[in-house]
Image 1 (tube, rainbow, N blue to C red):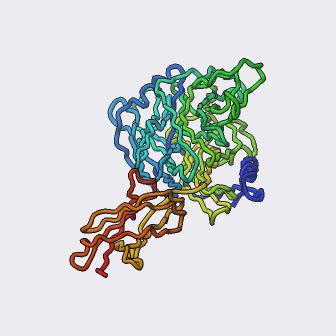
Image 2: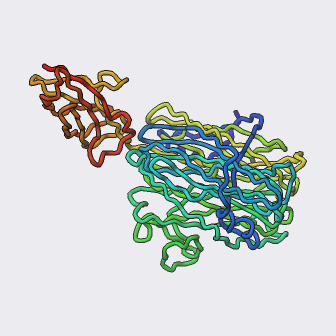
Length: 558
């Protein structure tokens, strides 16, 4: 294993770790194999670039995906559910091509009342092997909606030159997280994507200094009262896009900054932040306390695109947020420039050829109960000069988190694959990736109520009676969280139903309810059948599942 040495991120993680343990990064290299990679996106544009991306991107008709893969990473009942996936589409038709626009639904557990999706990379390529200059490369996850059992969204993407007559494929990767607020204090906050929000970004000249060619969006979000009492806001990527009118590419990159509780009064934020009192040019306003501060966070995102002449270009991105006291975000130091910086600074330097590469990474000493990696920044570069593009992309995939038990440090595993090539495929390229850690710590969980059973399959309730032959029914809580007071129904056949008050039950424990008099007419002639239903009140309490709420029993006449 090679040490990557992301020292600043390691120090930040260590500050959260028990005993100040140091977090370390390692990577190993394996041969590159990529059948489908992932995505890019845009909501801000430059001059004619808006014709290529912004307005039509999310207005394109929906099409069927060419492939969809999804697998479960975590399923901790009543707490956290994580799946990872990738999906691809294409446009390949005579004449003018179209934008790839795909609808998607991921199934969620019913106990999860919050959910979000992270955009974790992209790959796009011209299907027939030709290379082209780039007028627009992008995509965006939008229209995210959670129902009781699904998280749905649409994704749109494009790879094109100005003529838009070359067939292409477009793939994106995603990570879905769903959780219960009974266990984790975190709220998913959606931000609308405006396909017409095409903003002028940069005018660049060939003699511009490399430090001046980065385009920056300053973003803001307000959450009345949600940032009080120790809660923080975490911004997550939903897409990024860049383009120029038929430009070759030497370098292309993106960086998503962290949400911070401050406002610079003389900076223009999108959307506009709440009014800030007039201040001096060199003064900022903290927003984590006081009248203004309880609800505002700001962050910046940066894009970078250049050919040999560093001409003007367009850039934009899409984001969402998670707000709560049980969510944390630890970023990595990263920059889009500094070509000759050491490999262990600003993200590991990955160098590849026309076939691309796929690298294993490990983050150790992670102090969170649940953790996922987030591709928060990246850069792809032809070191020898600009070229057309036939394949391009970078994505994070194959996530796995090892943690031995409560209070223990974890190890986060993932892979980064990348590709940048022209038609010939013989040009070397370099890639850098900035991977942040999104972590959650649970403070409780969701209960799961079930009758005490004599045997589980089929679920049979034992006939237990007291000295006066009254029926004794037990209810257990097999979930990770405490159960509040509820109602248990005992339905005698014949004889009718009896509703029984059920006290709160801590996780892992059970209670016996007040004895119930068995109706005499239930014995027909010598056997009485009954059904016990836990959590039968109106409304019921929230629990992991209702599939185990019932049990059937019989009693012989005394």
